Image (cartoon, rainbow, N blue to C red):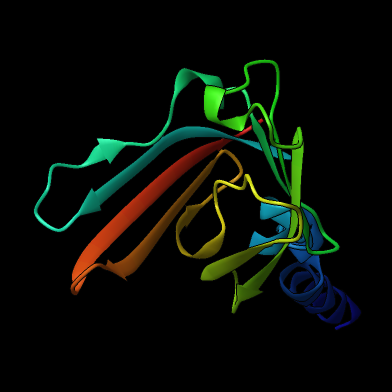
Amino acid sequence: MKRIYLALLLASSAFTGGCGLLGGDEEEETRSEILASGEWRLISFVSQTGTQPARSLIEPCDEDDFFRFLEDKSYAEERNQLICSNATNLPPVALGTWSQTGDVETITITNSTSGGMVLVGTWQVTELTNSSLKLSATATVGSGTTRVSTVEMKHQ
């Protein structure tokens, strides 16, 4: 009888207390932690207004810039070695803040320096993984025309 009781006790502990053996106790990173986990680089920035053809807003001089979403909700865009001709009179680092809704469904970036930010405004987060960040924003411009901008970044 003692052997049956011991066998049942061991079997039940394997199902209830053994989850740690299967790796179930590890915590996954939250989306906010992923976003604030380092530097992001711009891969693409495309804008389409109304029925006009979409156009790229990224230049080769933008491709080495860093974008940082810090845990304290501060935000930085750092121009690296290649400086765009329209940014020569801007500070090398544009600073701001960022906020999120829900589990990073949207992010809002505000500028606290004297200009030069690429991503000011509210963006829908369409993808957020450890390696990829995709954003989308829709705005009404002119006489009710809609502009859709999409941004793709990779994690460094």
